[in-house]
Image (cartoon, rainbow, N blue to C red; front, side, top):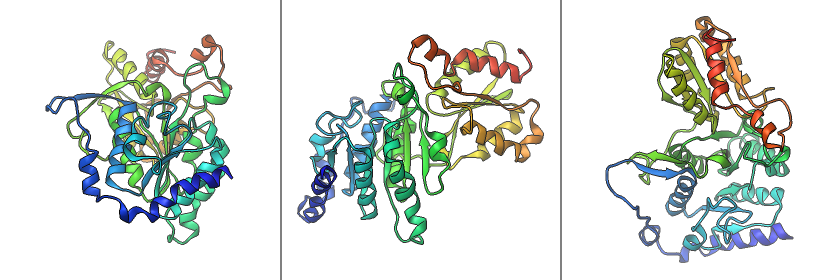
Length: 372
């Protein structure tokens, strides 16, 4: 009944859409303003970049709406949807009951009916309650319908470990969803990543799992003038070389890119030029960029916050071994991962359970035969 009541709040918007002001008029009325319009680089938090992406796409397309727990009146559990209820109203910013299976099903049904829902999970750990909707209903309907029924839905929210949230709230699901044909899986790092990739995900005709990181929400990154544009979109399935180098390739995604960049700085002090690749996209995986880098550096270190077994790093390692890049390797591929244990609650143990800058430096040196 709760799910039915929530859906009843969405469907009247379709019937009354003809009575709404024109899109051009609404864009003018709701137009955003920036603190600075200069050509200088603007600093923006990941939280604001996600918020801006959703606002721009909701202005661009009236079929876009957001639903989830506390996304409306509370402005989102992490304030990512702040202000959207005031700008777009409760027909397009929908608070749901605490039933992940229920509102994920509503999102999938709305997408199959022609809308473009953004389904927010308070954490992807809770999305396990809705994994049947994500994997089977969203991920497979397009194929099972012979390409006749697209499902343009975005499932987004924090993924992976935060701080002090223990075993049941700390898991990285990149490898889980990355295995599923029919899903696209994105794991952004910077504010620019978040804005450009979320806009691309919302416009995509297939379901996209958008894995954010709670620890990055308040981190500020530089945004170019291009990235501040309403038309800025990044392609899903392409990674980015964040730092060029010639001695060792370090591949990472999400928060691990921060540690990898710090490790590259430390290695540079010892004359080691590390190339850092930000994956951005888990599925499709841009293996070609990684192969090109390995051919140049002859060494590969893969960093992730997930468990070691059957992870993203394992897949990248397998594809490199199966490619022509294998003949260019001068050292074994190294994986730096989370510990193979449920995440501890005690801070001293939690700190030991995930990669950090010193560990990445140590493993990179090992790949260079500079340490054990």
